[in-house]
Length: 218
Image 1 (cartoon, helix red, strand yellow):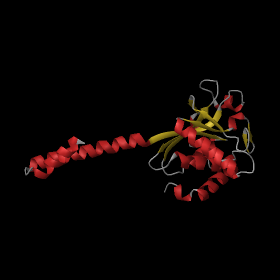
Image 2 (cartoon, rainbow, N blue to C red):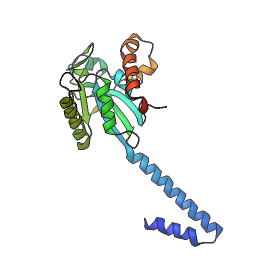
Image 3 (cartoon, helix red, strand yellow):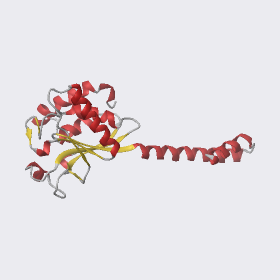
Image 4 (tube, rainbow, N blue to C red):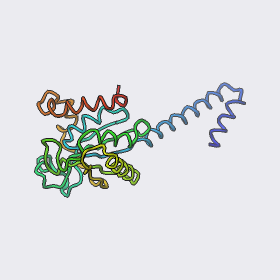
């Protein structure tokens, strides 16, 4: 702060053109550094499981402030699991999406709202016809504040009667995250004509758009 005051003082009192240019450059560099630091500081991570990760990815990719979405696996006991291993339901892993987001543009609270809307959190170990523990509803929190917010939101929703049945969403600390094979990434955008995309993912995407219209990327 003292350095910035000194620079501003020199800019105001020095009549030398060369000195003024030097001071302006210093101020400009400082602003750039502050801007870069702010961008780094506001990036955060959330990890959600809400059924098939193709569906979750397609929905969260649309939100303003979401930088990237990676489909993968977490919560199990097998290291570096393959998709086929997770599908047999014996690895303990859930299909999840790890979301990198700019918290200056979208909050964890807003991501939670999108999470609850993106699937049916009252279904235990399934979403529609996708059945098995790998499709469980789960929030893997990255810090105590995420844990607090997730538990509070779940409690408030249950007490409000927002759903006809109790929410069964698991809330657990994040463990190792294993990114799924490349062909699972950006799946809906690259395979939108496939039947699963047309009949399962597309309706969820359209519903999501209507609910979060003011939060979508433009």
